Image 1 (cartoon, rainbow, N blue to C red):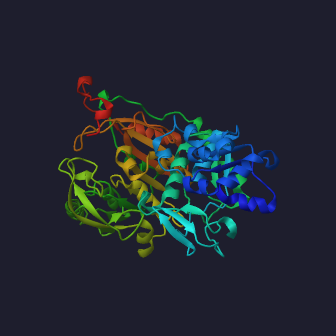
Image 2 (image 1 turned 30 degrees about the vertical axis):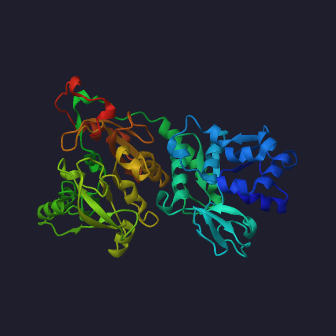
Length: 489
């Protein structure tokens, strides 16, 4: 990819496929890329994935049958979130999968950049140039990757994707590939790219084989319960699904978005230790009152996210006390003050939490960030319950599949409880089905919860428990059911 040809020239080895998708880097290396194309027979390079601007600049060479136009190739039938920000590594991997490669191993992808080297000077916008060849280049696998006069982008401009462009694009491509037959493994355990399982190079074969076995098992698993129509008015409580698997006493729970204590108080009655996070001041007052008889609870006013110490506005809506959030996803949300964030990694370290039975998350759009800030490397919750609703989270850069893929890659057995799209907050909602994950929701406007088990649950017990906790409701006349696209507020 990109300028790696400089290393290939020194070892006289060239890959089967080459790509350069950076608009600035491509034009900066136009002459050498032309050489690679013109000598492709000698080098053994079958195809070149390039941007249209570079192809036009190459003239006749760019019209070689070996050249593939990225902008044309992914113009149709590709989600816009994949093409609105392109990085060479992530999108080349997507190209590899489209070519039919089903086992992909990432080597040297660490996602950890020094954004501006001392030798780099600013040209314009996000574009830099090397004023002189760096003596040492920490961003690449050999020091001669960038030379004096090279033009290139700042890897992760602060104003784009919160300064994490490369990590975001890896996550997005990973989400798409998780729904295909392609298996991707990152053979760099220290990598910042968490979109794929990580392991040492020696263990790659075993990890790929394990993932394929798990996927095969998932394909053979049918839907457990449902689907039900909205008109049937079915209601359901996901929390009860875990009951047969919970320890009776001396368990530990972290409740993110504890509201007024409806969930955590059940565990306090069992003698569990509970850490309850509720940033909303009114809800927290009710939570404190409801749990006053119990000693084994610690109530925390900070909001949980993937970074500690950030200050965000806190929004409330008159529609529902359970819809307060750092993000105003409803037209009726109004800011009432600020909250400070904390990661569960920092919280667990501070309070020496070394075992966790149940992690319950209802963070109104920030559930994925809560998981990103959890210390899974040293602490493995036995059970996890987290909410998804793409309507809230797509503006934040993630979907249900980002969260589901993260849990699967951590080795959890994941199930999806899907609800019909929310018509209005503060009223009774209608439940649809309970199924294995990975799965697709019936509509992009659906919402629900992912239930993750560290150990495979007994499916018969799980199915019986789900069925036993279905609550029949009032039938809803079909005429009162709005069109799905307009059903989310």
